[in-house]
Length: 366
Ligand SMILES: Cc1ncc(COP(=O)(O)O)c(C=O)c1O
Image 1 (spheres, protein in one colour):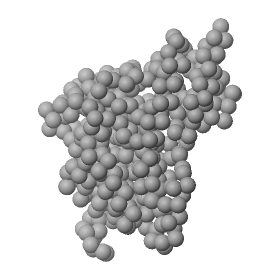
Image 2: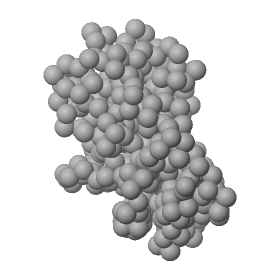
Image 3: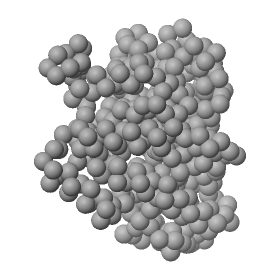
Image 4: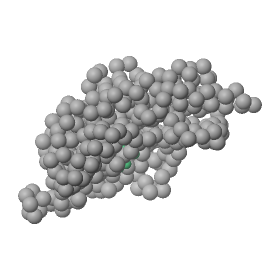
């Protein structure tokens, strides 16, 4: 079986985790703080605050940006559920906006219409590892005096003109789930240059404790452990290498599949660095995507659909608001996209095998 995504774990990672286990100091502490420091340096931001997962990172960022009851948060309609559910959890209403089909990221042309007097935050998502159009998103947001929260769950290491995503908004949320660029099992982080945001996230992830057993707010326990942080710290050392491997494998797919007219391949816009957290293709034709998915699965290739249901069709998000042009592109993407296997543990010949199967599927198609 060729897996669609998989964590890349080395002996060094294992030793780092075992080292913490042997130390007997398992909860968040010195190793977690070091992980935060190294990650902040990597991203080029002032603060990184680790939290229990990417969902917590989004939620605590919204709280720290002052989102509360009655506010609106603009999010793309085509993303993982948590981008929007966290707005609802913070008491706000998510406003769903369509995506552009070239990159599957939020369409800045739709923002003006989606922004109202109640809007507090815009959340661009760097989906699949390709940066959203941050120039236009930040320009419109600053015109309207809104905060920008980058959802970087799938894009650690991605860049715009040599600058890392996560350093453009007022805050950014990262995930270290096992399918992401680096993993801590479960884990996440908020990156920000703003002292005020970092302070609130630090406070709320730890029961609102200002000092030991002295609570100034109602918070949560959303800390990661030093066991997790040790894995993150060890993985961070190899992040650029792992992203380069992803980019190399992506180039193999791009070359192998260039001649397949029924498939639209991912693009990398000029000036940006795509980190291919997912290698997601668009399959032309009615129902052809699902036939290709079955064909590949039957031949030992795991695939995934990111995502089969756009947010405006999610029963749990019935409380969300759709912008008036929501969301033909997102609807179409949910019917046509297919993620092929891509992770640093794959070899070039694995990728060639998958690409050959894709080609043979289309050559056998009546
Ligand atoms: C775009 C996006 N946002 C948020 C999240 C939530 O991260 P986590 O699973 O760590 O809570 C994910 C994770 O899949 C994601 O892909």
